[in-house]
Length: 237
Image (cartoon, rainbow, N blue to C red; front, top):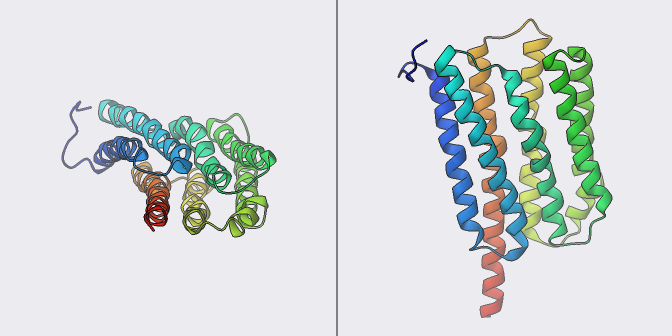
């Protein structure tokens, strides 16, 4: 296998593009954190760490692809088992910064996410029936969605009286609902529907990560900036 990334290598190019985008997003989030209200510091740290972790995964995946033409989708679970829980916990962190929330919400979001990711990891690696892994993963994901829409998290967001937090919560809740469904669809196609072209699947997952990590983080940044400017205008008034 050629050890250089060739211009016609779309998959390798997408790995390289996403790795650079992730590290750029991480640097941006960390640098901008100091300009924002303190209530957003933890959320900005989380999205920065998520992007940084993913950049490491993508640099490795790009090198693996260039060396031997392989980047098994199962390797992505090493990234996902770390970044998905942090992604979901940003909802708790945002709410906690503006209203009283019960600690039980933290544990429900964390455990639900781990059940979801670990079940599909075990299915993808062959430690569990791929069908059972898919079904348990779906249950964990739906549990998270239920918490964000109808559970304590959804109710706390509706009553928190902070428009910026509500905007970020609403937009990113849609990402968890729609954007994260791509991972489940990919799992189903790869393991239960006769397989798929691995090149196409890698590109789809790469594009999904732009939405679910970088754009997810930019939504939080936009809300934080709006909230900070509103606070500054109140002080000046």
